[in-house]
Every structure is written in structure tokens, then in C-alpha cells.
Length: 137
Image (cartoon, rainbow, N blue to C red; front, side):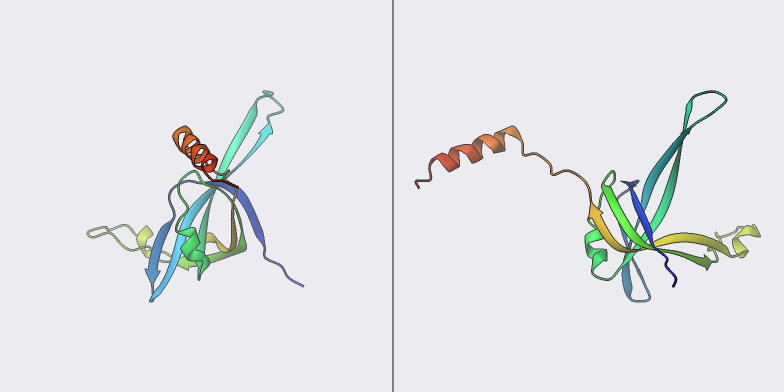
């Protein structure tokens, strides 16, 4: 049996972006995860942030496109790698642009938004209370 499953809990670095390629729409976003450890020599905590590129296809892509910077999410999916050749900039003589590069992505299967519900402004709460008092039961 084989299994390729990734679960990330973190924050979006920027708003999700919608792309179209080969008449197919998809959404991408970056999730930051953080880990830390205590350095044995100095006794200080050292933290490290990892950025994960997430790609969402299908119906879930529409929901993913509504995610904004700093959204707290849990993402589950499959780890994928792919090779691509970067587009050469006009007038560039760099050989690096001619070589293939490999990137790793999470092919997202589910997204759970972990943000707490926003509270209504105090003015809206007062208005809601007065409206409910007028309703006879």
C-alpha cells in the first residue's frame, strides 16, 4: 500500500490567485508553517518558517480563490513535484534560464478555514437587539 498525504496548518502569505492554463482554471496560494527548537549551546529558541505552494483545481478552486492574506487554514492534499523551464527574459544571456527546474507543490484535496468568526461592530449589535425587542411572541 502507498500513501502520499500532507496536512499543513498555517497562514496565507498573500491573497490566493486564480490562473488559467490550457482552458483550465486553478487557484494557487502560499501557506507558511513554523517550527522552532532550543539551541543547546546558546539556550535560545531558533524558529524556522517554511513556505508551501498550494494548487487547487475543480470546484474547490472557487472557494480557495476567496482566501486572503493572513487567513489561518488547514490544507490536506498530495505532495507533487514538477519540472519546468523558466521563461527567458528578453535580452538575457543567462544559461540558468535554459535549465529545467523542479518545484514541489501541494495538490490540495481539502481546505478548512480556521479563522474565528468576526464579531459584528457594536453599532450592529445594538441595532439587532432593538429589532428583536419589537417582535411580539
